[in-house]
Image 1: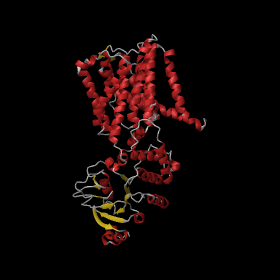
Image 2: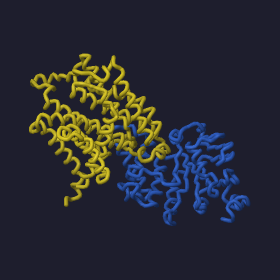
Image 3: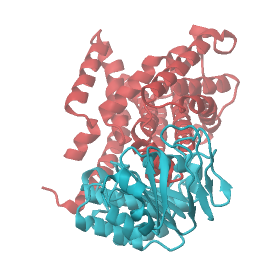
Image 4: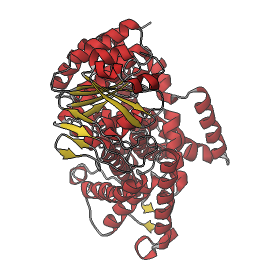
Length: 239
Length: 316
């Protein structure tokens, strides 16, 4: 994974954005509401096709690939609003993600799932969700759903992880839980995090890109971004 | 109050009792009721196959009768071509239905929800039209008649024939149980869980790397093949195959069976099939307007028992 480049031409939401993220980098992506952050993630993930430009994942051109093919190239993501499988149990969620990775889903009979079950147990333990393993995702709390949302992406062991506001609606303690979980990610995993909680972004990101009205107005180290007058203008003194 | 540790035994215990009750039917029921129970078992296989789509995969097909009918015609054509033997005839229904389901599924599954429902209905009605009009193959509305039932050498040696009601009922019961075990196994397998994930959230499954279309198509074809088994048995049971088998009302009755029985439980839709068939064949001998009664029953279930008969058992 050498990094990824996204280029656009005449897309209203995103206007000619270049973004290159190095392998293993932790990149923050911030900007006011409507700046195009989620749109950018959707383009990287393959849910939106850019009118112009290209998306590269590692050494391969992913521009024409569907979301599931990009996922198989190692791209994982979370969603701004929890996107879970309401009627399935918490353990089933993680098992689906593990089997997505090990390609264990074309089996038409149960059993022989010991390795998957073991990994599911470990992951639920690490995410502090083990006590909810048999509960349906629709019936657990918001913070727990956000944690499951994250764990679902992590269990597929992505090499590039897109996080869309993982802290949304979480309490201080829950935010700390998510941060701690993210810190356990292997160093070679590339992370792009979109987040309104700037403290969290500055705690995680090595570099930060700032979007405003579909244009990238800054890209650099946290200190440089913080000092950038255009960023301060876009945020109207939020720093 | 029954201790919680026995709760996991409810379902298996219920299933064993149900199987025993069904198996005893030829011993005490009048001949006409054995016939109705046979038809109900065949319809139960059909309804269970639809439950795989509606309940587990979340695909509301309104054209499932197409595969029931194609299975019946495939079996009928083979049997009338002097091919004898249970396995080839059932395989004919299975493979015939599966072969037709592949292109229909590939096209219909490009859509979802109400559009999927309408497309499957449209394809089924097209096949119905084909069965009516392709007279050189299907003999049109007259249908294919005089379909022989297969002979089984080991049954012959016992001087038992599938033309007798009891043995044919048992054949249908054994196949229905086998289909139940098969679908239950699939539903609990990684493949079944994947289908449920797709039902709950297709977008997330794609984001996880699942080619969801392929899974849905596999479920569609598998369900059609099981419906084809039911169609083959229907052809053997009736001795004829007519376009009626493919008509949209048959798809509708199967959906009613799934809803009344309670989807996503397999045994529920099987019980629902018995309710529907007893209404259709049993009630109709006493009441002219059995559809009205079935309709009222359907409304009552949707309003008061949204999880169907299976929900009643679960609550008990």
